[in-house]
Length: 431
Image (tube, rainbow, N blue to C red; front, top):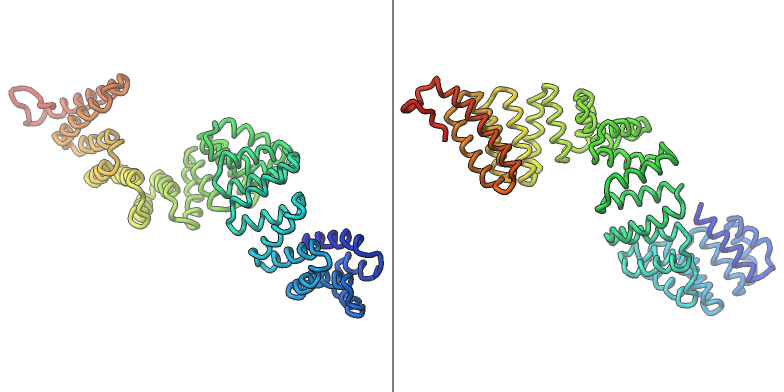
């Protein structure tokens, strides 16, 4: 419909310059009655003027080969006019190479023709000729820097070329020219989220857009995402609940609503949304981790183990993530009083993630104490102390905290070992 309207306007303007005769043909062409126009045209002498009408009628009927033939035959009569017709036809049949060539010729004769610049730029972009496309979009904003649509198109091109700073700037200018255009606003905010812009600044801007239309889904999705990123989980839960009420049941929405509910302690409700999201996509590391954690909190330990084991064995996460999953398996076994299996998985986590070694060793110590394997616990306390002394040598506060942990463990073990036969010369062998 939009193409027909554009063609009708083009016909009306073009034909005023061609002739004031043949009013019936003009009327039919202008109102989109191309078959009627063609019937009348075919009864006329095939003059260049009539052939122009015929070319436009064929174009209006999507008879591209016939239209191309007509426009080609008219190159000698009105070269620029015929080239414009050929460019449109080749564009519509998907022959980008020829369409690009014809638009290049048009702009060589008429370098400020906005419609041709836009069509040419779009074709270049679709053909992955991004640098050339960028030149055309830049030209648009140079011709009219007050046109928000031109800045938006420039932003789109910069985004295609992964030029985040430039795309953000272009979207900002488009948004500044029209604050009610929430589609552009959503593009601008999305680019801001990819930049090192303070979250609070982005959030305040999103709230301004939210006031324009509190039901506009792209803005709501961005609002919920940044609330989750800022750990405003109560607000995120409200936002994503509203999004689901508006009919969105996408993976993104279900996942973030589930995480928000989990973070707010609503584990049973979270489990329902996690289950739905997991049915859509079971390959998301974060979803699987928090889902398993939720299942642990609602007593579904075996299902939690299945999800984590499937994630490790099928998806092959990077080492740091695998360590997190092994730690969670350890937590599951620990809550099930299967301390040997818990320790086994904490040690696997330790092998994969040395940066957080003290965290895993701490959990191993507690398992050993719970199992009453005090000599094993004693060994890991010594290991904890040795690592902490080196790791926190330049950080007084962290070193003091670690030393307090060691002191606490030693006091527990001293009491427990007192009743064992591992006392030599009346002294407890704490390393």
